[in-house]
Image (spheres, rainbow, N blue to C red):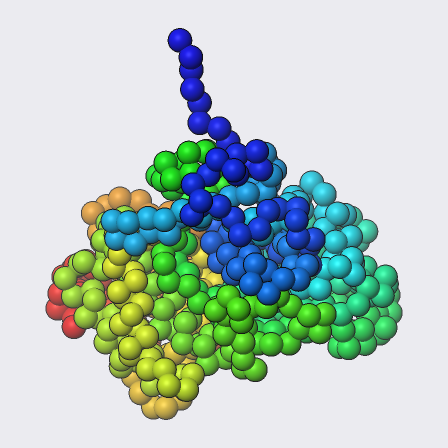
Length: 496
Ligand code: CS2
């Protein structure tokens, strides 16, 4: 009896894919012009899609060399598939799958850091993009100061092969300067506050730690490297077996690197690319001279709300964001958070309503097909809270207001990190500051005021002024007391 197996996605299977699933370009046809650090699901469903569309519409040698800082798995899978992967766009009951061919190469930084440094010094590469998550930058979330961790110091001060992202970037830029390989733009696509300026400051701080006289390097950086700010948006949960099953069913080929995401996507980029850039405007990217208002809009009215739903939902035992949004009172509380606290905290982009934007974000979160896990969004809270919630609080306090709903989000995070859901189940604490958080909680009495006091003492998360603000403390302790006594569901039912 003949055994039929589904073939693996690759150049050899391309001609057998249904027409509507085929990539716009074939990997290998377009030479590389971009190095991307961070080959996770978000990059594959966002920048890779936009860049492929821009190349297809406007040409140019802008293929991407994707670098995985840690995961060897994604490099092996993509290599086996000739760097092809699919993106399945989910919307309610329907799904559409398309293969993307933007990857001109893939590398694993852990096993071959020298190759990554050499790429950054290659004149053909004129843009570096990054999606390495907030913690990948090794910056204190509240101040933006470079953390002085041993790994990073060793990357910068010894001749060993770099293992951190800032280490790779600095060594690469230094090699580029020495090779006189021409100007380049470093484009952060992570949800950091003022991400362009943060990365510029990261490079500047890291440069000062390099041994020897680096005056020439500083001058070259100032003249040849730009750090455009950007806002990126698309909900792309971690892939699951269901993602790969959907891809295989649509393609008739197995795709081990498939990702899925929502139909919505947005990219706003400051147009400062001294070595040129893809024709992004042909792919729907908004090019601007100031991404700041867009970035604040997204971090505060979308990501802040996302985090709030994640903490409250996980404590209430809900697996997904969509399920958490169905808790009675959740949607109303989130709408009031945006309308009463976020909306008054900054000037939005011209013509954009913060309340309307917040409403549409809630609509996106509500789609159960996306199946974004509350625990995934809850990860790394210490790195996310400042730009998502604390900046809203600081701006509202400066205007004399009492940001009640934003305080609920801080209380929800403080409730979540204690590690036990309302039904007694254990919640994971996946956070670079997990040890510090646990130590502070272990030393504190369990009363809400003591827990809040202990956590407000995390000075790389909470600025001193905010931690010492009695109004903020009272609001947070009030909510934490409610959450402790009555649980998330009763708190929300009585709140909005
Ligand atoms: C989420 C984001 O995991 C998280 O923290 O809030 O990944 C979110 O889905 C994206 O920023 C949407 O663009």
